[in-house]
Image (cartoon, rainbow, N blue to C red; front, side, top):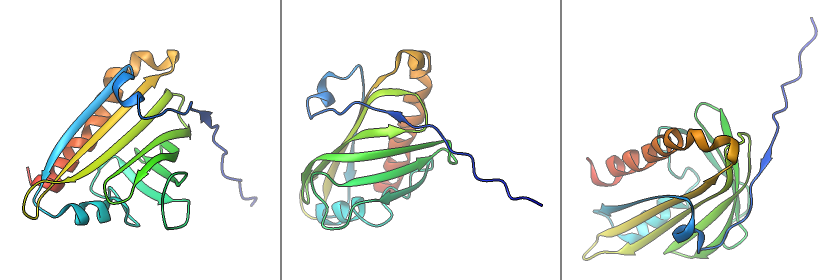
Length: 167
């Protein structure tokens, strides 16, 4: 019996952004978490080999650049039971404090531009505050799916709130 080759998926390119996009994007989601751990621990978890493992829609996050990480670092994220894969490039990296990426390409034709920003700040004795911003501009064909995409992306915040704050 002949083995079938795995099906190749199409890729859809996304446009790059800069830090202004987190204030000007057509769609912006933002959440802040009070974390009862030091900022250094929160940062270490976000740059670990398995970051965001607590987020139920994420199947895996794989760094595709070697350490040490910085501006230009890349990673690949698989989500929703393999339905979508997004390749990302970090355009801002303030070690121990902040990192921001934009999507390079994805396997779903959903976004013209997509980016995330993670800000980790000390917040008193042994505590931290983490602010996560997701910003996107849908492709015209995907505009009707914006409410669904917002709900799906908001699950990242719900899972993170449970992870960080125990709620």
